[in-house]
Image (cartoon, helix red, strand yellow):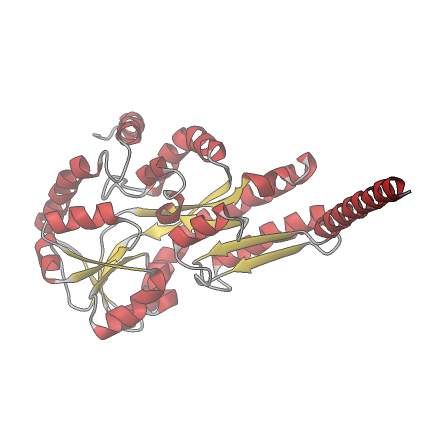
Length: 345
């Protein structure tokens, strides 16, 4: 009797365990969540496009599916967002190359090459040429790139007017805390980087910890940086390129039909971001000028100095900030494109 009772008890416990697992799985399926992090401000162009993607995702899930967007860097800086995706605290993020390179270093080739790209057509051409290979690298590392965006050209916003590279050697630069290679390069050339997170920029420039912020005009306007750093150097130092990525686990949880809907919505969102963000660069500069921003344009001689500085930077960037193979690939694509446009490489 004792043996038979034990067998029945074990079977009953196994049955309860199986029922619990099935029940918890059903609850999870009925209450799916997709959590997306970004540094973009709430109600900004980027936030609105993430909301559009969320509506598309919700339409495929039904029930009580929840799509949560954490804006304004509330989940940490870009490197932290990449980490949170890896450990499952977030399923996705809209981030720039600063965060994307934490996943796949080759992406840095689209953003970390100063003064290389002369216009958005060149950026688009090179990105599309490299897109398939870059997206495969992300996929192999457990992430899916859903859509590509950008947010304008980096300009230098400073407390005091500056025109030439030498002018900035007297100043302290904001630098991404997650890019020690960039900091080392800057120091070797006589500049003073101060590694910080994005959320630290405004208080740091207000207190004098830094006095130069490389930033897009849109971000400078949204964050009010220009109030404390009212001088902008009119130079397209580098494009800020970004992408919406989600984990492969979150992607694989979607049905094939749902994947098509989300992919289509993300592609549309990326196109909208690129189109409107580029237009908003000029609008942001105009708005800041009306409120006291001074736009400083380098002379031809000073611009020559900037180009010479970029030429010095490329050998240092190759193999450190940008993998050598990818660095060479960008230059080859750009040379081919400029040849079709009748321009010198």
